[in-house]
Image (cartoon, rainbow, N blue to C red; front, top):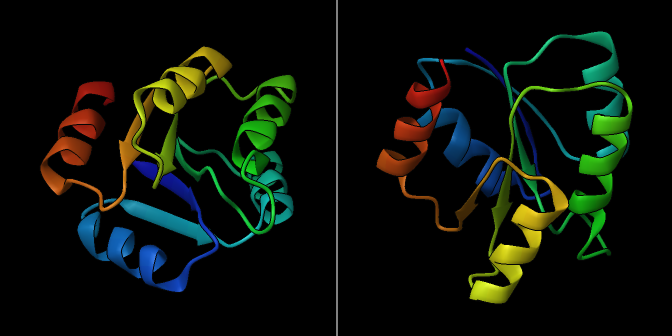
Amino acid sequence: MKILYIEDDDINLLVIEKMLKQHDVQTCKTAILGKELVQSDSFDLILLDMNLGASKDEGAELLLELRELGYTNPIAAITGYALKDEVSLYMEKGFDAYFIKPIDKAKLIEYIDSIT
């Protein structure tokens, strides 16, 4: 499976790369680069950090932009925010799934297996 992980934290990028080493994982650190990659390549899944840079909502904004560009495959929110209301808000915005940091490897693998 080809996965794009958009995350601004180097440690989190490394964790996911190691966690999903059996998959083709591409990473980037900004919403702008993520959008460019989606326009130039094909991904089966996007893992999207909710808090990219200065804006808490940049991940949600990027989700909307990617959907407007025609990306229809799953996009999962990756967040450090675990409050029930925040998680509900992410799902209402159109995310297909969410994972709270630190990410539970078993749950992430189970989700990936369910969409392949």
